[in-house]
Length: 630
Image 1 (spheres, rainbow, N blue to C red):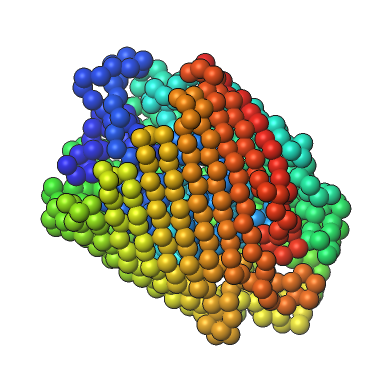
Image 2: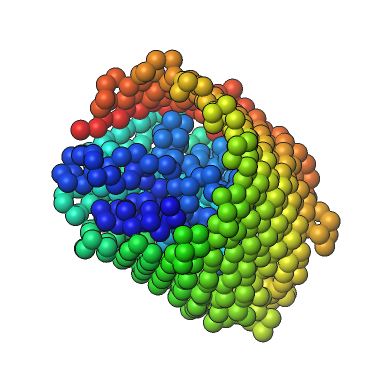
């Protein structure tokens, strides 16, 4: 059965958006639930991030990760930083502690080369195009879906490194109906509270989570607090048509202590980031249409001894995707997008005094994708996209992927070639003192080849993949000699990243789960023949979780980063940076079906290390909490 037939079954129950959200259920005629005449049974997990259409996990390459809500709960993930720590090639670097600036070097690419989405809606990264993943919690998410590697055909700009799509719950799933309250306390005056409510009545589903976190951390002027609300509404209008409303609101305050050489005692940043997006889903036997409008804003107010500034980006996006099953083996997707960004900075000095910056950037894009199952063994995918911009040249991208299976041996082979791009960030344009030399989008060609092997009745899974990225026209800054911020933004550099990603997972009798990942990465500036900083040559993650009883579970996870370079905060010279090996412990006990208590220990062996030179991480920290559902 092709993917469109699956979509038809889901939409007949008003659940198409749920499937695209990574839900774990499918309609069935012969089962009944608390929703009256709306039945459910378990179904295979699906990912959407790879092609923007639902694909089973055996049809996606090892570059694609599906992190389920079950896994996030088992490992007590509180933010995307925790999720990415277990995944190969993600390269997360936190500048110290919770809430601090976090860089995302997916496969060695820059932080602005990875795009973040919520149910297919692009999240607003603000002026820097670097989304704040340290403040992004995982409450009310059914899955976190990751595609490493070039993704511009389906997702447009800023996708050289990859794409992360967060999929939210729907209360059409009986497991999400009711109210759950959760509280947690821990070291450094840490406390976290959350409330989740899910309601389903006939054709209407409402699910919403509100959470709050607050901590002092360890250094002076290093406190962090954040309040998040993430609602979702689904309504079945007709047998084939559904309405959806997706939203998110984040308000945070982060004190900024500076590095250990030049500490700050009063600087801090207030951030407000929100998104609201209504949409429509239509699906028949051979046709699926998804249309949505999205409005978002990122507003960062920075208070420091150097002066106060405000950075703001307001975005409007209209997105249309049409999926058509031409035959049982061929699916086509056609998409179009319009995006308008209004970027503002309150305080820019070009040597002529303070000059506020305000600019409007527009983007028009369209793409075509084909998925062709030529036989039981071979599947081909390809696409092409064109984007036109108001401030710089248009870009054409394309990709081609092949998957070949040996079903009897449990083996699949994968290969992909693609090109992608990343246009100048709003901050690049805002601080460009010479607009006559406006920088053009950064461009990349990427290649990857790998395999996945399963054995022992799928209890043992192993995959390995080689990737290569050739990135051109990297944006750099040339000082013009005018004012404190007199910099000309130009395309000058080239970079190359390549490496190997290996994953192993073993499950025994539903009691023991063991996993290990290894990433080998080479990331260099090819013009100067120097390594890109903060990209470790070797990254190793391993963990094991064991069910001692039906009620009690415990696990241990270790992450090691080896052979990396950074900028010394004293000499400002690039050089070797210390290795780090950090262990965390988690445990939980289900008192009954409704009540669970849990605990975790971060940095179990109290390692003294700096994720970024000059910014020490927390020492050992202990947390404990309780969750009640009614």
